[in-house]
Amino acid sequence: MKEKIIVALDVETDSEAREIVGELREEVGAFKIGLQLFTSAGSSFVKELVESGVKIFLDVKFHDIPNTVAKASIEVARLGVWMFNIHALGGGEMISNTVAAVSEVCERENLPKPKIIGVTILTSSNQETLNQIGIEKEITSQVLNLAQVSAKYGLDGVVASPLETNLIRNEIDKDFLIVTPGIRPKLETKDDQKRVMTAKEAVENGSDYVVIGRPILKAKDRLVAVRQIFN
Image (tube, rainbow, N blue to C red; front, side):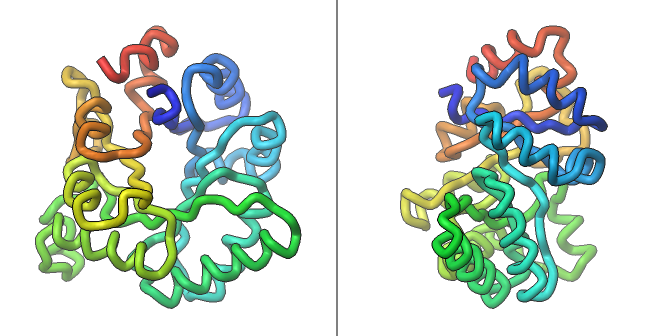
């Protein structure tokens, strides 16, 4: 089960991240580098971890015109990351152009092709958030729609809250990856997350991977926290 755990390196510096990776790399499947650490430490730090044998999920959430996202995604593939994401809201052309561009470059340059997954609706969002930006569709229907678009245009999976995993799993091919943030132990605060579940519940509902940050990073003993995630 530990291979299902992705620890979010939501810290300010590469030195903090190195400490966490050194402590937990044998206990979890991968680490997530998001916008904060990527902006602080840069692509060179991503390459450093990749070259040391660490599986990295680069959480950059690209969303731009199709050509821009495709070109940026090529550079992510050249970093050697295991997985990265783009916004499914970018639509079919953005998705298909990105998948094609990354596949072509990886084949031509003999690079391992990263998993590319689509962000559906952020776990910090709820129905009120969607209504504010003009999306009237009920949130679970919107997530499923974006997952179906992601699958249709060639993505390997999606990022979705644990509340939608079972629905996606029942509607889309079983090999379609579901990566789930919004994981909280039962007694933990939700912080800024609104659609949450425990790690055990998420996996039982069909999640392939669970992304966990603050419940591990803020724990008095991070090793103990990781080892108790599925309790």
